[in-house]
Image 1 (cartoon, rainbow, N blue to C red):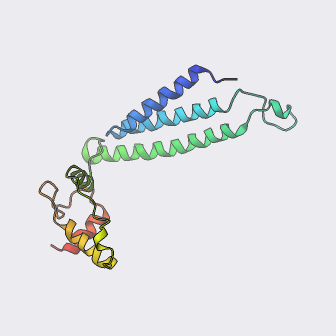
Image 2 (cartoon, rainbow, N blue to C red):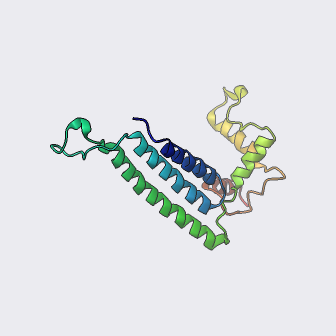
Image 3 (cartoon, rainbow, N blue to C red):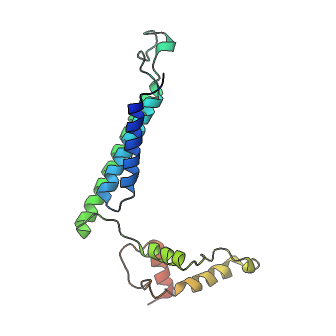
Length: 177
């Protein structure tokens, strides 16, 4: 028996809308997108499990007519996981609203640096065939010196901008005041 075309269309619409919303910068839209995607996957599990059958209780029906309980158990587990993820995203959105007055996700300093390197078509320096003979400590020290001076468009490492990760904090401690 083939699945109902309407249910397949519902799965497609839920997943497409969910993916579109997850790619937004607002945490509330990301939250709605995650919920829609979860519901789409749950419907997909139930469509893929086949037609409904008799209860899966031993002795109540023939084994061939029993429904498979595994997809139902997977959907229940997915619902619980989605509930936890929804609570986490709601807490993040609320905290962002408290701190900034909006719930948009902003770029990190590192994100801007990576984007700047990509625009300038620079490599990361993690592989240099000429330095294969040099010890690892010397190569990493050379890389640290090469990347220590920020470009004119990048903020200073001493700005202390919100979102500085542990790597940037360690770099600031090594460079000194």
